[in-house]
Amino acid sequence: MELRRDEDDRMMRLYKASSEGCVATLNLLMEEDPLTLSKLSVNPFGETPLHISAMLGHLNFTKQLLSHNPKGPKLAEELDFHRRSPLHLASAEGYTETVQALIEANKGMCFVRDEDGKIPLHYAAMRGRLQVIKLLIRAEPKSILENLNEGETVLHLCVQYNQLEALQMLVGSVKENNEFLNSKDQKCGNTILHLAVMLKQIETIKYLVSIPEMIRGANSIFNKSGYSAFGMIEHLPKDFKCVEILNIIQDVQKHDNPELSSCSWKYWWSKFINHLKTYDVDWIKDRSGALMIVATVIATMTFQAALNPPGGVWQQNTNTTELSHGFDCGKEDRCLAGTAVLPNLHRDEFIRFLAYDTTAFLASLTVIFLLISGFPVKFRLCKWFFNLAICIAVTFTALTFMEGVYLVLPTDIKDLVYIIYEGLFYSWNGMFGIVILLHTIRMLYEPVKKYCPTWLIQITRRPSQINIPLSCKSSCCLAG
Image 1 (tube, helix red, strand yellow):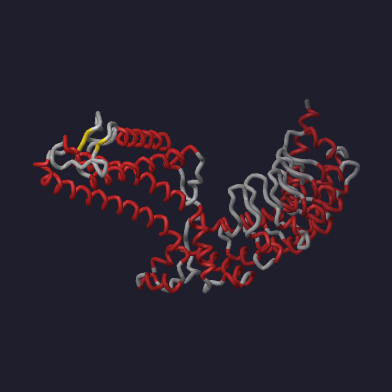
Image 2: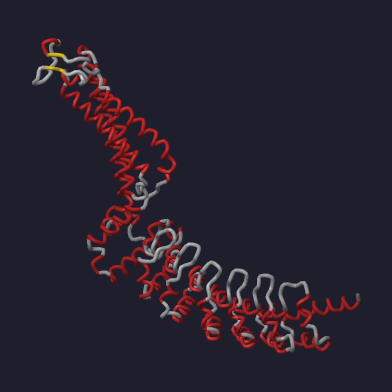
């Protein structure tokens, strides 16, 4: 029991000495028990004294620990509870000389991964430790190609943690490796340019678009959401950074393809068409069942109205001489059994009735066809067409009803009803026109607003909105 207490006391003194960097205490403990370092593996602590010393940058203490045999050099291989080596911790803190000492003890630790798949170089990149990055790359150049568990490269980490100088240094080391520069992570399929645009890192984007290898993939490499790096900006919340990024992208595209300059109609037309493509389709997913029922009911009603027209059909062949005044059985002077009655009395009105009924029937069939055929309603223009078909089906069903009612009314009240009918006709058609106009404006508003020339935006702004500097990034700047 006494021996156990002495070992625990000695171990506590060792860990205290490692946190203070006291080499004298370390030497004293080694004199008392040369096997002190050999007993570290059975202690309950997660870190070894070398972890603590390296994390705190105690260079002399670290070197002294590494110099002791036979266990000294093997201390560099020990991992803590998160599977991090002393080299991981020293790299994260940026202690260049300590990192050099650990590399000299065992440079193979440059490839050791922690529980997240990070090697020491990843820690140095995340914290922007430029000198440490140089040492690690010089020791093991291939370590720069090591990916994390989800496929991110060290370049992804630089962008994620906004370490531009570290990114520049690492890109300079692998500039000829085009595949590595445009590597995509496994989770989202984003390249580093995707990530920089998503995080709105202006300076990082400016640097990346200066690299020809990155430009080539900016519009041709797509992530798992189907967006290119340059295309992502259109799907982010709009602010001043977005405007500046759009300006950068436009400058790059003008330089890469002079035909697509901001003064070219081809440029604005291509941007306009691209913006028409994607749209929110949740409304169709949520209402597809109801739309199918409504379209089916309309198709059924209009089908029945065509086969059983108002006023019925002739039950037998009838001559004009047998009919009352007003009926006209045509050139043959005979109304055939099974044909509609009212065309022989109100020819023009009945033709309008059939025109309305046929239009509503075909529009409702169009809606049914679009729903069951997998029509690409994710496109703005397609959604507008879908809305148009629905509105036409409902509108012409209403017109069919009003025309059918007018056909079967008694003659003595037709003039009065016609006034009501005329008001309803123009009211309904006016409402139809307003709805279609609103859908058209909704479809065109965002792309027109987004891609109209800068001079037009300046004209339409209020005076207080003009000449707000793009570099103004805080809300207090706008408040002033």
